[in-house]
Length: 252
Image 1 (cartoon, rainbow, N blue to C red):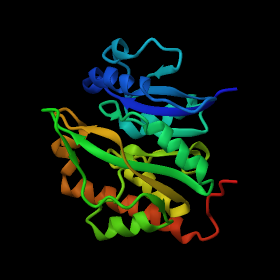
Image 2 (image 1 turned 60 degrees about the horizontal axis):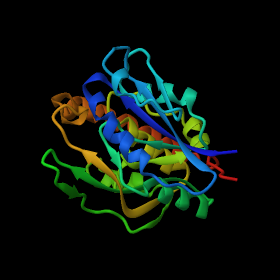
Image 3 (image 1 turned 135 degrees about the horizontal axis):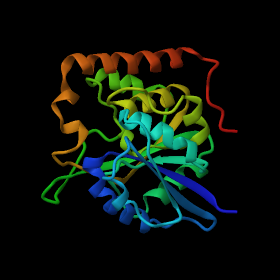
Image 4 (image 1 turned 135 degrees about the vertical axis):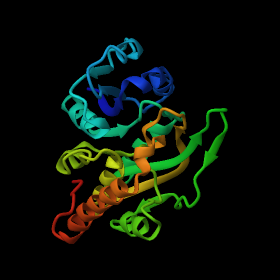
């Protein structure tokens, strides 16, 4: 029997042309014997724009649905997720060689850890890469530490939610991604950290593509009123979960 990591990708028409690069980054992943990946691609909407870029590969599951932004698309994709672990991969990003194996190694070697993240490099339009400041040291991320850092650094976490891999049971227990127009992955990261410990891998695991059409580059993403509302909901959810001392995810 093959053990699976489900790679979860939400995509909309304008970003679909990046899917072949994401697929290439999956093809070079090497996993231990008995493991493979499943790629769940969920379109945010029903158009003819995405299908031409979906690979003809039996490990790929493609679905469509009503438009509701990335959070809803990913959560709907969970209906087809078969893996014990779920790995996020945005349609315009790329995994680095060995990323899935490093994720899996961290989770298997530390059974008390429920999720993992890794170092990210921004991939600029000219092909150059830029790192983030303030990466934590490799190792365990204690319960509650991400929320504390996020509060103290203007809503910026010390680890990148676009690199998340997590136990599927924990993801389901928290209801999937937050129903927000953006920051849904940050909300999930903080919620997971409120109830469980994580892991950070210092080796680069993701190339985060910067391009004009990405959602986070749009003016609406930095609208101050909306941003404050998003952050308030994200913080409130994580704070309530953290206050439930008896609600702790058990990996056993």
